[in-house]
Length: 266
Image 1 (cartoon, rainbow, N blue to C red):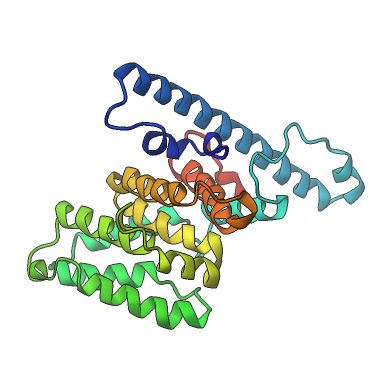
Image 2: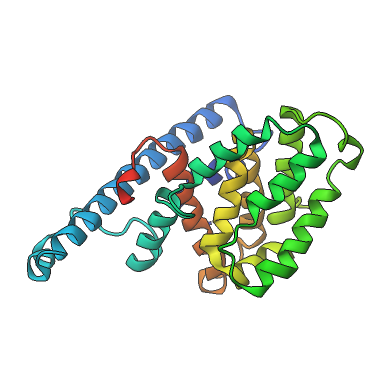
């Protein structure tokens, strides 16, 4: 639990319960806002420094080495991992598109879709991009995801697609990708994804879902908190894969839902 302060998105679900007093809820919310704002500012300053240094290095490596960083790496990732994560979640990932661009394009197309069944077919194509080069992503995971979507509310397949079906589908996809509940803490798909495509692409999948339906963002945070609580007694070095997911998710949510503009990483 010493890691919890690093991840404001866990506060609501890990530090509060149904029995928490109103005063306690308010206090946790204030701490959450403060910690989130601090992380956003630290990340923005760090990123701006790294990109400025990279620009100077194109002219003079010696001059770039003399530039002092105003702030250290605000994550548990290495500098290289952090820069890669920033480029992934704030930059362009597929052609000239950011994650937000892809979500907006999908949504504008989806509302011309006639049936829920057609929407699920389109959602499958949206979630499994061509950039997945591993055989696991192309075959095993793709097949599992396709079956999951086909089995999602099948009795509504012939109905017109609407917001309610979007919410239900995205919630069930997150259950499938991460973890269902404390009572059913199976997360084989999640662990397989991380082991085969890595934490960045795994978090990218989660981000794709949340950008389609922002109402499920708290639901995703709840799934992650269940996973976090499941491993809370484990030593940090035994769950480095989870730490990398938590860090990358923090960056992804900050870049796409935070108040700072990180678009300069493009």
